[in-house]
Every structure is written in C-alpha cells, then in structure tokens.
Length: 318
Image (cartoon, rainbow, N blue to C red):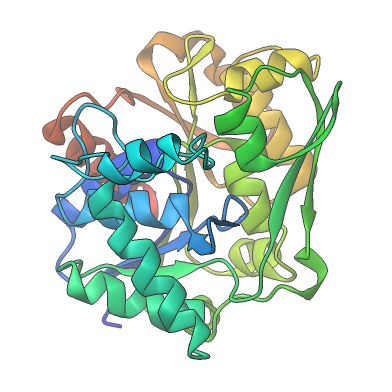
C-alpha cells in the first residue's frame, strides 16, 4: 500500500456509490474497502454476500444501472425454472450472478478464507480497489421485530422490511476479527483518510464497527474519520434506514444519525458531512464535537459521486 491510502467502510448500494466516486479520484490501488458481511447468508446451498457483490459489481462497472444491485443485462431463467419446481424464489438470483455464488461457494469449500476468495474475485472482475470482508468468520445480523426475530435477508427481502423493528443483534460477533490486511492498514501510517459511507447505521455500519477492536482502532488512528450522513432532508435515499429510525422512536434526521455515532462510538468521528438541504442542522451536530461540512451528498451521476469523494478527501488535513 502506498502513501495516501483511503479506507472506506461500506454497506451495499448507497456505500458503493461513494466507493465508486473514491475509486475515480484516487490513484489505482489506494482505495481499500471494509465491507459489511452481516447480510451474508447461505441460500440454495450457496454462500451469498450481497453487500460485497454490490461493491464489486459497482466498482467493476457491471452493476445494473436501473436496480443499483445485481448485474446489467441479467436474465432470470433459473429462477423461473426453480419456481416451476416449487423451489424458494423469494431471494432472486440472476443467471449471471449465480456464477459468482457458485464459484465463491466452491472456493470456500476448498478451505480458502473469504478474504482470499474476495480478493481473487475482485481481481478477476478488474477491480483495483482492495475489498475486505469485515471478518472471515460468519457474523449474521438478526432483526428483532414486533413479530419476532428475523434473519436479515428474511426481513429485508422476503418481508420487504414490513415488520416494525425493535433492535438488532449480530450473531457471532464475539468471535469475529478483522482480516489481517485490514488490521495492517489500520496499523500503518500510509492510511490518510477513513470514510464511512452513507450506509445504514444500524445494519450496515454497526456490524463492521462491532467487530472486536475495530471502532477503537479507527478512532485511535491519526487519519481523520469522515462520515457522510445517509439521511437527507428527513429521508433515506435508499433502503430502510428512515423507517427503522421512526420505529425505534428516533427523529429521522442527520442529527439523530450523528447522535447515534457520538453516543455509541465516542470520539470516533472527526467530520460529519451533510447535504445542503440539511444545512440548518450543522450547529446542533457541531455541538456533539464534530466538524460539519455542508455539500451536495445526493449522488445522481458519476460526477456527483466523484465530487462528493473529493470533498471528503479534502477534509483530511483540515
């Protein structure tokens, strides 16, 4: 890793957008991404890693522009045939996407670590960023709902986030540990900026920060930690974060996001980036001990992604 390395923490679609922007403004090989694996699960005998695959497909230019996840030009013949057989089709796997899951499952069965498998997959897809799972050992997010506990994908995909949430837990987190390459980066002076992408705080970023030793290592590194709020003008641009916040009895605002991080991870954040539409919230967030940057955070185009990435990186020496 050379000087000027950047570490991004990311979930799926929203985080992948900013990672693509970072990849576009950084020299090849300087972007490192620590990805949420709490969403991972085994389905139809295959290991599915939704957030990692979204990152890899996005960074390689292969993701579906319309959906934001999965592959462009995907077909669904296997799902159609499986449906005729009465199989489980609630989690839809495209025909081309299936190749990723088949190959990864085979490699894991050979005894390879998830870190090594993802590194090779990234290379085969032409991704020059280093993408790490948050842990090689399984961590599984469970959503506690008014209807009882649900594995994350059952809640998110099968139930379409319908049940009201009460809390979240991460099974296996006590035995988890960061991959050696991620730990080495956090011990290196080559790391100059840490960016927490605009991903769901509760089910995308919290699982990563909950890996033993992770959030304190981020806090204690000399590199500034920059977080981009996933809530803009009282809404989540993607995913169920706003719905979750309301059901947890929280105000749906960037202030509540800032409070979540400041209370759960004191001293972690140096910079908090909010959208122009939320400029009036800056003073309240600054009172929590963070420097606030107001800019456009909605990423509709590649130029938007790269502009936001550049703004985040510009904060490193401020």
